[in-house]
Amino acid sequence: MSPQYFSLQADNTFGLKIQARQRIIADTPNTILSAWQNSRRRHQPFLLLGAGSNVLFLNDFAGIVVLNRIKGIKINEQDKAWKLHVGAGENWHMLVEWTLKKGINGLENLALIPGMTGSAPVQNIGAYGMEFKDVCEYVDILNLNTGITQRLDREECAFGYRDSIFKYEPYYAIIAVGINLSKQWQPLLTYGDLARLNPVTVTAFEVFNTICYMRKSKLPETCMTGNVGSFFKNPLVSYEKAEMLKMTYPGIPSYPQVNGKVKLAAGWLIDQCQLKGLRIGGAEVYQKQALVLINVGHATSQDIIELAKTVRFHVGKKFDVWLEPEVRFIGAHGEYNTPIKAIL
Ligand SMILES: Cc1cc2nc3c(=O)[nH]c(=O)nc-3n(C[C@H](O)[C@H](O)[C@H](O)COP(=O)(O)OP(=O)(O)OC[C@H]3O[C@@H](n4cnc5c(N)ncnc54)[C@H](O)[C@@H]3O)c2cc1C
Image (cartoon, rainbow, N blue to C red; front, side, top):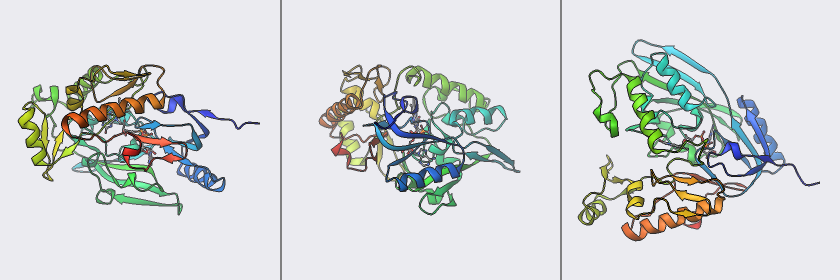
């Protein structure tokens, strides 16, 4: 008798028809740990997921997929700040909205980012001038190898641009995060339509609503159109390289970083190659935002990979800037750790 497989189509926002040998919903750290121990005993691969909004499955998964749904939010009001302790399986956007409704400001710039709270530290989610690290106080992990839980403070998380220690520690299962929100709220109004708001009178809800409006106008809703948001990271180049590019392309958006590097806008680079609307099989470069690759309804993993390869090749050829994926590639036996050139 052939083994039973479980659909992951609803568990990856690309909406790919992927299956796994086993699919478990974990609402306690112990469930995660026993699923891990079972996978070791059976010599099967193991994957911990939130909402699957930052993964591209390349094949069916030959092992156990555990969906983190550990719930619970605790608030501790202090003189100068609100301290939140949030279960890793709480939906991130709902947390943002819930805090605002309680009069707790500070998460509004990260509104409408899909996924779970426990996934936020993994790539240090960021948008509209803010990153998760700006509000992170600690991350609680369960070390799957030892079964011991441990609290990492912000420094130990080694946050960077779409980066953290959690990308390199496969035995760390995030079970909760600690968030620190100062009562001295300062609006962050540097990006897009936010710059039009009055910094003196603006409320956190207005910032939230403006961001939701901007995001809805340029990003497809995952329930309608499969996607993972930005497929590629914004590339960081040297100051010299950025200056050289500016000579040929005076309009190129560029953002100097504190480390001396310059961040370029991947979407702009792709757009300059006139790739919006390019379709391979069921995968397409989104018309309203070139950084987003979409599943028009019948895409396979291979269609998406071929499209990403084409985009990367054209941008590389035109600008000599080689885009790196933001999305995580998952093969039959786990995450691909091979150099990116082996895939794209
Ligand atoms: C429309 C859209 C817009 C987006 N916009 C943004 C944006 O503005 N900024 C941004 O930064 N991202 C954005 N993203 C990407 C994505 O939403 C974030 O990366 C999000 O944090 C992923 O959460 P998730 O629960 O879906 O993670 P998943 O995709 O389920 O997992 C992502 C990775 O984290 C690992 N992981 C998941 N849970 C845990 C855990 N508890 N412990 C340890 N590892 C874990 C997984 O194994 C996987 O490698 C967007 C995605 C979409 C679809």
